[in-house]
Length: 357
Ligand code: FAD
Ligand code: NAP
Image (tube, rainbow, N blue to C red):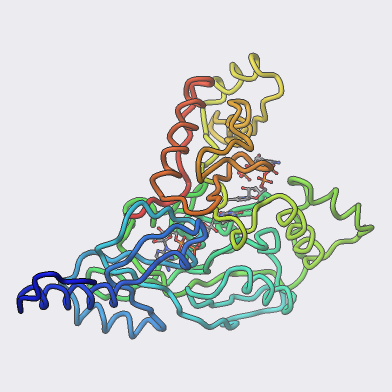
């Protein structure tokens, strides 16, 4: 920082600017898109008591943002509000009988690490959710789901701190109002809570294996497994994911950028008449789920690169950062993709990724 005037006021300004820069945190290592943006204040939270104490002491600061593994956010700009990084660890069994166990997990625990720990203990229910990046605390936010299973099926309760008051709150599974990639925490509860721990109720025996989704059964057959257990299912899911999805440590991405659209069944069937190969999954209440990836692919985006960003060559739902992209570049591509899907099919696709700020 070079100062031409060298007046006392100017020096003071420069020193303040330097101190501010020093206090700022580059968020590039903290988001799987690998986008550079700075946080004016970055606070690592190691336990719920520390968080509550902090909130009481600094009760006037702007509404903070809660960061887990940064695998479902798109940084559009620098952040002037404080960022609370969830580092709350710990996992233990808090209840069990002959058939099931309830595990309590710190919100900052790595999700896949939790899956592996449960497998080691012989606990079933989340094996299809293997290799999903991010933290346990973020899992209820969008009701994580993959290969026909959602956390909704095993979530027992959630403990959270209300950011405005520092109060500890307990949520039952039904309070969380989990839906398809959706929850209370994405609606009325948005930005209001820091999830400090979750409890999952998992099976100890007679596990209900879910094999009829995607390529799970085919992968098990390929590996000669005729009587799969929960570990075999986890390995199959892990293998399929590794062969299909870009590894965020090599190529920045946040998984599926868009949610699959849910449309009235009648509309879906009319589209099917025009595009007989279009995947269509019937839902309750005369609704149907369309595969956003397929719609995007039909618009010619799969594998297409625009500057530093692009649509992944193996999975059109995943937008990637080839290096040096800004959040705005990713968003511009997403907007163009959404517009072409709307024009071709008359269907709106909404982002699954959370835009920050
Ligand atoms: P972040 O990205 O840090 O945060 C996401 C949102 O949750 C933010 O709004 C944040 O404020 C909020 N949040 C995070 N933690 C807390 C907390 N403790 N309290 C309150 N709010 C919080 N998702 C799926 O559902 N299924 C998949 O199969 C899947 N596959 C993926 C594959 C790849 C390669 C990638 C990169 C992502 C994938 N995702 C998938 C998306 C993502 O991994 C999940 O949504 C995950 O739960 C996000 O966790 P996170 O800790 O990284 O959250
Ligand atoms: P895929 O198996 O190629 O399937 C494409 C789409 O069709 C998926 O989005 C899936 O919906 C839907 N689908 C497939 N079989 C279905 C069935 N039997 N019933 C209902 N819907 C069905 O998908 P993929 O991209 O390889 O991903 C595999 C799984 O991992 C999917 O469940 C996907 O959601 C999950 N995943 C999620 C993310 C993310 O960031 N959210 C990233 C990667 C993978 P659903 O998405 O509703 O399951």
